[in-house]
Image 1 (tube, rainbow, N blue to C red):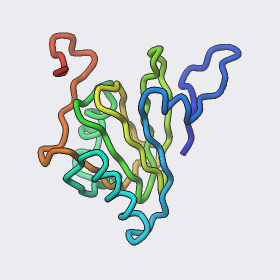
Image 2: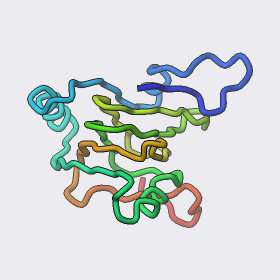
Image 3: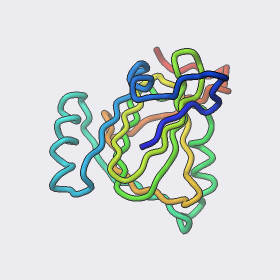
Image 4: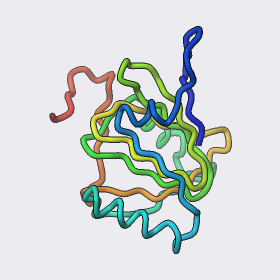
Length: 157
């Protein structure tokens, strides 16, 4: 995992895990082995009320990959946490700081990231265009994105 300010100002201190934690983002690195990673995921599920778990994979041969990625790259939030544990590949989360700056988080194999509900963010693939990750949800329906640029659509409080 790498974290940095997307547009650091002059003399800006480096972005750190503390900056992510300040907005409620949880990060942990787990061994990529189902025997090793499932118990920590089960503890997280029990602690936070996640009831669903699946695996998603995006790669250059994914049908309509560009259309799928276009939905993720627009700044949005969810009324539920966004939980991703990376099994293969890599991706980029841009997450808003408390002062509305972008923190860029590059996740790779073994990275567990929890973006809390109601925090603006966006996601994009790296040049490799490949990620396979475990997702956790509180509801079997998954989550709904509320896009920031849609001023007429407000996310429920």
